[in-house]
Image (cartoon, rainbow, N blue to C red; front, side):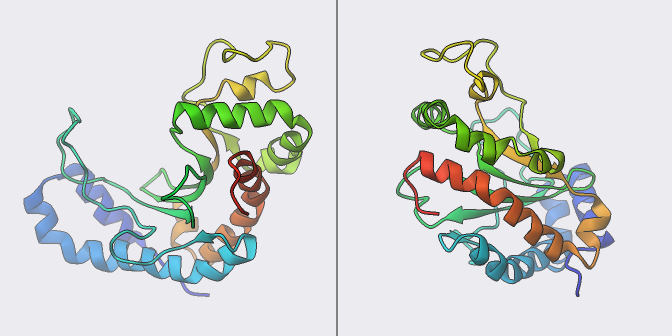
Length: 228
C-alpha cells in the first residue's frame, strides 16, 4: 500500500511556520504542491469509498476550490495575527447538506507533531448547541452507546478546551451526562503520530477511525434531523 506524506511534507510545514511570509511561500510553493496539497488530495480521493461505506451522505470532496481541503491562506482581516498562511493543512469530510443546515463533519489534520483525526461539531451556533444538548437529555441511552462505549473512549478523547463551569441553563445538575452537556464543542478526536502520517498504513488507519467515529456522528445527525 502506498504512502501519501513524507518527511518533506513536514519539512515544508516547519519551514512555513518559521518563515510565514509571502516571499518565502512563493519561493517554496512547488514544495507545498508536491509534498502537501497533491498528496492530501490523493488521500481524499482514496478515502471516498471508505467514507461511503460509513455513510453515503458524507463526502471527501477533491475539488480545488470549495472542496474538503482547507485553503492554506489565512483570513487575517479580523485577527491580531496577520501571518498570511496556516502552518498546517486540514480537510473536512462534510455532510451533503452542510450548506443548508448545521451538520457535523469528519476532520483530518496534518501538522508536524500535531496530526490528528476527529469528528463532530466545532464551534456550533448557540441554537445548534441547544438542540444537541436537548437531544442528549432526551436520549441518554443512545448517547451512552455512541459516546461512552469503553472501546471508543480508549481510542478517542472528548474535546474539552471549551467547557462551561456550570450546567447549561434548563438542565438539571444531577443529569447523568451533565458534564457532557457543558461542552461547547461536540468533538471526539485522537492524535496521529507523524510516522503514521508518512507510513504505508495511513489510509487503512483512517478508514478504521472513520468507522469507529461513525456512531457518534450518526447520533449528532439524528439530533439535527440529518440523514446518516
